Each structure stands twice: as structure tokens, then as C-alpha cells.
Image (cartoon, rainbow, N blue to C red):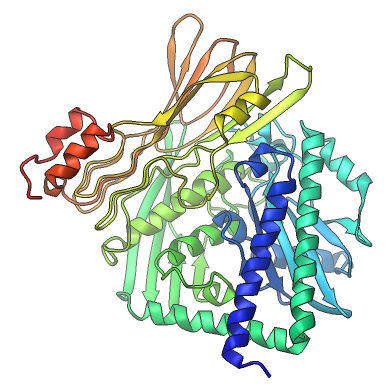
Length: 554
């Protein structure tokens, strides 16, 4: 008999590594640069009750929504008298079931061991295109969900361990890049099959009863650990707000965070109502953003599983931008509203937890969607990319330069890869000097990324922080706003809003400058040597020097 504590630890880490290995298989066998290069996918293992028992360090907005999506998927299948059976897989992308947006295709595999349901291996992957009005299926044009792309309710994709090619092809043919979509779907199926084998191998060694007992104890252990951390925090209710940009409007996200010894309650009363633009975040996204924000207050050794999730209660008014009613469009809610939820929660908690909470980051995925007709082969193409920016300064530490933040955890796509697949050539890719907010600990600087079109390109931009700058904390100054500029053939420079749809003609250039992070603490207290080094490294501009004291102590 293996010692109980040893069994819990071995099982816990095995489940994590199963999820990680699934992710490696998915990434290495995917077709699209978005998954293969950027890693825009996530994998997890859930038990028979739909509780997360193991997840990889992938995309927070993906993994945080998986248990919610699985629960709603099983409810849907039960209503259709189609409960899962061995050797099957189901796929879906309906955001109001799966919990993110249409591009995130979810595939779920029920895992049976000797006719006993052990649980589920599941993954989400951002498909580069699922149809709709805009290239790569994301933009600002959509006024309802149907205009964002093809909607797939939970549908059997695999039966007797064979992909139903008719179902797969029907979905792929409704997209702009069917070959790529089919390749990525097969990669997702392969990842779940690998997870199935690894989970069965674990259970074959320890037995079904021991496995289920270990899972219960893992979750209980995580819950106890989390509650012990809450006990160290200040108690009370903390208010915060932040804003999304939509044309000439600002949409408020208002949050009240209640910290107590028995858990955390997050209430969004007062948040803006849902809109006829794709900035609505389905409830699965809101769950993901809230659990991410609270998880970052915990020690790194805390396992992100259902034991942690059960300590958080979320109240989100139905019909708001954080819990819309179908068929409100939602593509950007997954991408941008999720980011702003995190910033609003952080803003609420800065007074109570000043040494844990950073100043605001650039707070956007700076989404770039492109498409058109390839002049070399005459085929339709689509491309999706997110761009990093500056992370906010923190107590005792500067912000991080040029990084993805909060609800994304992806890499950049190398410019060589983009130039290979798309008719364009890059003019710049560098850190954006002077964009970080001044502070005793400065904000991280953003990124500049610009390219010239080699053919006519339809472009959709979905960003943030062009009007509402990333806030500073404790006397720190805000980061510089984002900026999106088109250089036209006639020499005209057009400054765009953070959300636009445009056409680039050959030889026209698009420049994207992401925001810098806010500064933390009084800039006059920053050490002289640090200011000098920042200036020499071009992190801060000459104009910013006046906000620093160059005679402060070393």
C-alpha cells in the first residue's frame, strides 16, 4: 500500500504532466502558425464530475472556462439523449456553451477504463478562421453572434476512434482556410487520444478506487491551502472599476471584491449592459478572468484545480457585458473584456494588498486579424496575431518589457513566419522607447510592430488603451497609450481608433504601438543609477527625465 501523502502528490503531478504532454502533441502536430508558433491552445484533465483535476500552464481564458464548458456540454447532450460513450469525442465552439468565443474550438474525450467513466481529456485551440464577416473571424463589424462565424453546438466528431470526415469537412468548408482548419482539428483529436492513454496508464497502476480517492483528496488539499492564504489577507469589501473603449463611448466594468476567511466573492453590479458589438464576455470568460486574478495573489505552488475554484463566488448580472444574453456578439469579450476584468479587480485590491498588486499593464491582446487573396497562388488566406506590451511596475520591481499579460499566455509569431505565409514585409519590430509609466519602479515598455502590404489586405484591429491609459499606483504615472497608424500611398498618416476595419493597398504601411505599463511609486524616489541605465538603454525618453530626481540616493 502506497503512503497516502505520496499517492496524492504523485497523482497530482502526473495529471499536470498529462495535460502538458497533450499540449506538446497538439502544438507539434498543428498546421496553423497561430497554434504551432504562438501556442494558442490549452489542455486539461477533468474527473467524472467535471472538476478540473489537472491542467497545463497554457491560456488562462481557455483553461478557466473548461469546467464550465464541460458542464454545459454534458447538460446539452443529456437533453438530446446523447450521453458520451467510450471511444467518442465531441467538438463545439458555441460561446454560450463552451465559454469563450467561436474561434476557440473545444474537443472533449470521455475516458473509460473497463467501462467505468474516469473523466475527460479536453482541449481548446484557437482556429485561425471559422467564417463570419471579418478575416480570421474577429473584428468590430459583427452585431450578433451569427455574423462572427459558424456556430457548432456539441457534435460528435469521433466515433469508434474514427473522425467523422463528413462532420469535419462540413465545418472546415465554412471557413476561409479549410486545409488548415482540418489539420488543427486532427491535432486536437490526437492530443485527447494521448491524454486518454496516459490517464488509463495511471489508473492501471493504482486502480480506479485509489485514483478517485486521490482526486478527492487533491482538491480538498488545494481548498485548505487556499483558505489558509485567505486567512492572511485583509478582510472587507473593495471597489474598483475600469473601462473598455468602443467608438466614442467608454464601457464601465465595476467590481466589488469581498475578501473573507471562507472565500472570495466578486460582484459585477453596476457594470455596463451588453452591447451590439463584439465586446461582450460570456460567463465562462468572466469565470476565467476572476479565477486568474485571484490565483495570482496565491503562492506559485498552489495547484489551479477545482479545489481552488470552489472558494470563489461570482455574481454577474445577466444581460451585462460580463454575462450577455445570446445572440450578443462575443469575439472581443474573450480577448479584451477579460483583460479589463483583471485590471478592475487589481484596482479594487491595490489598497488592501499594495505589495501584491501591480500597476496596470498594457491590458490588451492588441489583436491583429488579416486576410485577402494571395497573389501568388490565388487562394484565400487569413492570419491572426496578438502583440505584447508593457507590464506594470510592482512593489520592489520594475515592470516587464514587451510581454503578453493577464488572460493570454502566448508567444509572438516570428516575423519570418508571417512574411512566409502572408503578402507583407516588416519594417520594424522593437521595444517602444518611453512608453512605460514613470515610477520608483517604472512600467514596462510596449512594442512597435509595423509592416508594408505587398498585396491588398483586409485588416481588422481589436485593441485597447488608446484613450484610457494604463493607470499607475502609489504615485506612479500612467503608461503611454496604444497607437495604431496607417501610412497611405499619398503620404497621409491616419491615426486609427483601437477598434477598426481597414483595407491596406500594396505599399501602404500599418504601424502598431502597444501601450506601456503604469509606474509604481513616486518617480522621484527612483535610484539615479537606474534612471541613467534606463536612459542609456532607451527604455525612458529624454522628456521623461524631468519626472525623475537624478540626485536620489544609490
